[in-house]
Length: 230
Length: 372
Image 1 (cartoon, rainbow over the protein chains, first blue to last red):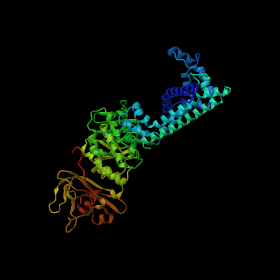
Image 2: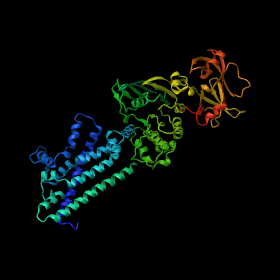
Image 3: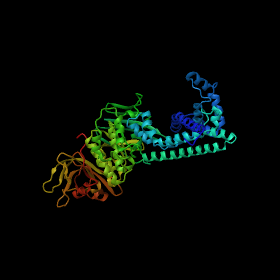
Image 4: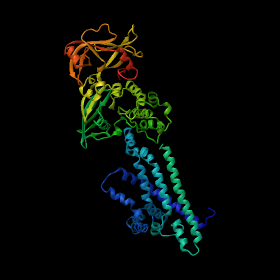
């Protein structure tokens, strides 16, 4: 990245690293949530559904604040994580990954649900008569067939994670080299006298990243669909 | 012996069915659409849970609600061929075939090469499933079910979604399976032509109840069956034994009751079994031995019973030596001939009509019974 200044390339690589961690964290949970919400009917289904979608309608700053309450050093989960595993989330890039994961979770689950709803349950029944148990059926039939949605969900979530601002700055603050991702660097540049040039460059980077993420997602989805013969 | 007795309530529909199939054999679950055939087959497979009942094949107990036993479908070792094939779109033909084979717990009785040979799948192996025709899809689905090494094969209207040409393409394969594998099969259908070609045993289902069952010959005379298949398809079905070739005509002689019929079936040798359908509308009844007629086939017997058929016609059951056949005559003719139980009669069948049917459709067709 020869045309980027050290602080810019730091923000870029930090953004990518946080987004990757974020997706790694939310992907298995997203698949589980999509499966439970699509395939199970139980008391509290609507409540869980609403809960998963909550980050879409809440102000990001509020989500960050909730995370502070829960995962802060004195929060119930945060203090336990620190005691049990020595994991510190507040003011760290892992904390930033958690915040972006929570914010992009609804997008991810939505994409997966749509593709899971299109998986013919008759195929799972067929697998069942061929001797496949529940986990086997999920791994060999359901998951491969919902793969377009899983990929689309992961890429969308990754792109959204790159751009998350409010929840990140509230939960883990704006620390250069640790939590200052692209949007936070952009914000900082705008607050700095004569930072306009830096801000413009960062804006272009963000724009290109977002665009290529969305195009990549579309390309992947098309390839997988062709593989499945649709 | 496959023994099924199950009850299931589904909304306003209720199923209460019981039948026993001597094994090996092919039982056709036959009835109008909506009669509960598919529900019954899903209960046997375990894809639906019965409210009460038992499903037992020989010493394998799959369901016994009294004993609180309900083996899940994935452990029942039942092959299931669905109407819509249900091939896995993300796997190749070979991947589909291997899917059940890999998960088969029992010792293999059939391998991929044998299945590919029986169903002509060799050239399809590397294809994607969306590149297959409807008939090919069903053949792959049948192969996939066989490779799961099942002890029972269920087929739920496997030909219903195919046009008649594709149907004719798949039917011979099903006949081959019946004749070459000692595998009990349950075949759901509402098409009597398929039943006639494949089944050894028929269970009639109406409104969720099994109303009649028996061997196909016996069932061909059944009143309930007659009302389902319609007057033109009514007729006795006889599994006759090929006796040899008639020197003067070159036709094949087949036993039917105490008598014999001559049919066009040059590919069959003595001892083979040939299924004959004698349509009631194709038989002519005489009260004297036929003479000076061009008809080559006549069967002598005595009138067993008369029953009112459609308007102005009677169905005459004739005992031709332990076997019954049926002829339709007009009510006026029955009166003029004074047809009554005990009266000796001759039933005339035109060989020409038998021969013309033998080529593709009814009534003469070669069937070697499974296990025979």
